[in-house]
Length: 558
Image (tube, rainbow, N blue to C red; front, side, top):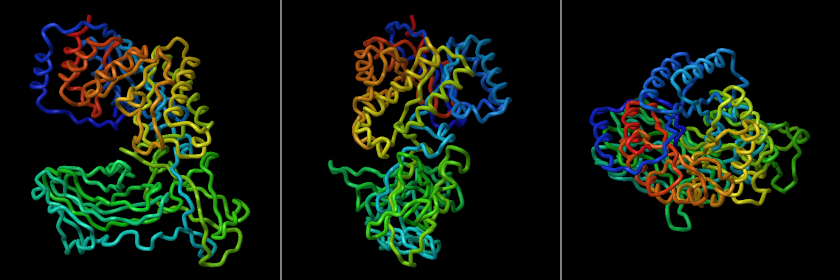
C-alpha cells in the first residue's frame, strides 16, 4: 500500500544491501528512457523539523540524479482549515525543491484511503447496510436487542472447552481468566482459538477483547470468517491491531457487518507467531446499534414498528445522529469504542415495544482506512474544491491521483441506484477526477496507482468488501494518464496490459525490501514499451537505500 502511515524505521545491514544492489544488474541492461526518477515523501509540512529532514533528502536526491518528489501530506485534504504557518512552510519546501532541481508532484484525490478528505463531511463515507435490526423501547428510548440473546459464549476464556477448538499453542490461564499463547509451542505454526457464531444477516457488530504481551513477535487479531461459494474462508473484517512486543492489558476493538451471513467463525490469535507470549481475555461481541450511523441522501434511516408502520423523523422520533461520527480523535477518523446514540421517541410507545431499524454505517479497513462514497453528488464538489486548492498552492505541472486499495464500494443507495458495477463506478470516478484536474491545471501530466485498474491485481471480483466486480475500471482512464506500477509478481502481465492500452508507465519499486528487485522490474520494462520512470517508494520513511536504488536505475537509463 503506497500511502501507509509514516514512521522512521531504518533497516540494518545497509552496506550488504547496497553491494547486492550494485552487483546484481545484468552485464548489458536494456537502455530505457527513464526521464522521471522520483522518490516518495509522505510528510507533515506543518512541522518545521520535517523541512530539515526534507532538506537533507533533497540534497542527497540531487546528488543521486533524482528529478522529482512524489509529495503526500494528509493536510492536502483540508487546506481550508490550516493557518498561515502551514502555507509558509509549503513555500519553503517549494524553494528547497527548486534549489535542488527537484520537481514536486503533489498527491491528490485520496480515493480508498479517504480519511483526510472525509474530515469535511464524515457522512460521505461509503456505508454498509443494516437491515431491520431489532430495537426495544425503554423509558422513551429505543436501543438494540441482541439477536440472538447470547452472541458469544466463554468470553472470559476460563474454560477452553466452551470454545469449538484451539491450536496446541493456546492453553487456559485460569488465574487471569485468559487464554495463553506460547509462541515457542507454536514454532511458527498457527496459534488460534475458534468459535462458530450464529448471527443475524446485515447487522453491525462490535467485538472487543483485552491483550497482554511479553516479548511477543507476531501479529494478533480477530477474524470473522465465512465459507465462500468456492469453499474458501473469507473475512468480513479487515482491521489491523497495533500490538507492542511487551505491553500490559490493552483493549482492542473491531467492527464488522454480517452482510448476508447467518453463521460465521470467530478466529482469535496469531498466524505463525515467532517468539514470546501473549494473553487473550474478556472477548465480547455485541450489536453495535447506531454506532457511526451515516446521514446523507444515499444512506436513509428507516424505522418501523414490529407491525410495519413507519415512524417519521422529527415527528415520531427526534433527529438521529452520532455526534462522534468521524471526529474522534480528529476529523476524518472513525472511533469504534464510544456509546452509540439511542432513538429518542417523540411518540409514546410502551416499554418493551419492538422497532425495526435500517441504516448505514462505515467500515474501517487496514490501518484505519475509510473509503468515501464515489456516487454521492456532494463528493464530486468536494473533490473539485480539493483539486483547486491544491493547484492554487503548488501550481504544479504534474499531479498524482491517489486511487488505491479501494476496499469498500457499491453498498449505499447512492451507488445502488446507478445500476452500475463497481468497475463502472470507479471508471466514472477516475474519469471525473482526470477531467477536474485537466480543467483546474490545464496541460498538467496526470499519474495514478495501478492496482485498482489492473485486472492482474485488484481490478477484479471479490475484492475485500467491494459489492460486485471491479473489472472494467480501467475504461475510465484517459490514455494520457501515466500508470504507476507497484505489483512486482505480475509485472510482465501488467506492463503488457497498460502498454496495449497506450499508457506510459512509471515503476514504483523498493517498498523497504532489497533495492535489487528493481532489476526484475527494469528487465521486464526492457521487454515491454512505455516505461518512462521510477519511484523510490517506502512505507516506513526508510531512505537508507536512496542512492543504491538510483545506482540500479542509472545502469538502465539512456
